[in-house]
Every structure is written in C-alpha cells, then in structure tokens.
Length: 142
Picture (cartoon, rainbow, N blue to C red):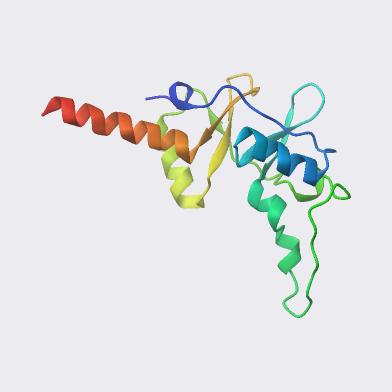
C-alpha cells in the first residue's frame, strides 16, 4: 500500500503572499483544512492549516499579554505558515506515514513525487479510507 493510491491528487494551494482571510475562506469553500504553500513555479515552501489561521501560535507567546487577533488580509500566509516541513512521498508505504501522523499528531502532509514536486496531499481522512478498505477486506475474508 503506497501513499500514491490514497492521496488526494487535486491539490488546492496557497501562495506565501496570499492574505490570511482570503485563504481561510478559500479553505472553507473547498472544504479543506490544510494547504500546501507554493511559490511561483510550484515549489513547495510551506504548509498552513485552518488552525494556524484561526489562532496563530504567536498569539499565546506571552501569557501575561492579551492579544487581539483578527482574521484579516493584513497578515499574509507566509506570516503564519509552517516552513519546517515533513512530507510524504508517493512511493512511501502507508504504514510509514501513519507512524508520522501518530508521532507528530499531524492532520495532513504534502505529498511529493521522486522529483520532489508537489503532487498531492494525504490527510487523516484519506487514512480513514485505508482503514475502511482494510475492514471491508477483513469482512470479505470471513
């Protein structure tokens, strides 16, 4: 079982200079919670989640200060995106990627091909499809 079989190949992406409000509503429109961030030419440079957009980590950096954070386009995706990327590859076994999801508590990973090009995204929902397939197979084997 390889990642390429279960990943979502139709990837909605963001650009580093996209406004965060615009990006949040784009995610909502497409019913996704994670977006790979790509530069011109398609190079993967970051990853952002709806959680990053709703409440960035820096809001809580000082427990003594109250921050008023508003979702607007004064901030850009590059201000909130993760740049220390963990990725999956199309040829990775699903079991290896599941370990990454469990160890790091990730909800999704960008998927790259052997040429390190972004070709998909693998989410926890995609992994539930793997589980459903295995359970169905188990029923049939009985």
